[in-house]
Image 1 (cartoon, one colour):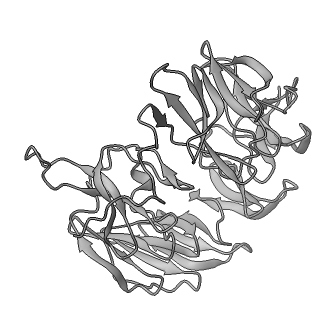
Image 2 (cartoon, rainbow, N blue to C red):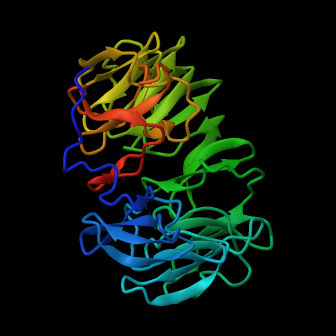
Length: 379
């Protein structure tokens, strides 16, 4: 394959050899700021895409383990003495370091904890706690509601102002991260071992009839009936019969079903658009990665082959923590793997970025790349 040099627009290694980037960005006045480390002092701050320090490198660490996308970014997480605090864009300390963990702010709130085993809570930008008594938060906000429990052990939902919107009335024996979050105005809920869906008032919109269920996405939800998967509409009617061995939730207008060890992609009309593959990934930028016989290629939204199959595109091990981001296009580039021999003759897994023509836009020379945020990527 043709390997192109790194362009000045797609900078991967930062401008200065004394600075290394972290993997998440911060948006201030339509300009992306990036957590970065001063390799001389070993301290962290925030830097712009032009190489200018916006928050000087004076902290033990900065940033949070969540992407900036969709977050408020009015306050920036910083670390001192293993505690998280927050500064504003002028580096004024707004919330002194005091938390064991903390996220970026979203809708005016940040999720914080005081220790590994401590109950989580949310704070506002004035460091006021969201809930102070008779409630324990048990998840992340989604559509401005979060699952919580009270002293009775029953579960309901709290709003971003700390008030009960759905009073505790649900009994949940086991908490699973993939359940109970509101998506498309419905939340998956369990009752006597069966799954259904409630609305934002806490009423059952789809009765708990299913052995398993996934969140709604693009107006469809995957449900399991008698050991097989299918899709339902928001009125509870079957959109695609439950005859499949496995299933993926809808994303960007497409879902995927597995039948007899082969995966098929379906569109919003519940039409299968392609032949069966050993593995499929969600659509992004109009392309979806598909695998057959340990070779990866890409199809378009009509099911046509857009990029031919190649053994280069993935290590195919699934052992890397960034596997979910591999072969997913973002702003026209996707992380891909090359197992070609290096200068020493070792055929290892090296990663770069391919464009939508399947060409190496950025050569596969990295061992731990991340997707682009703005015009920079962590490698």
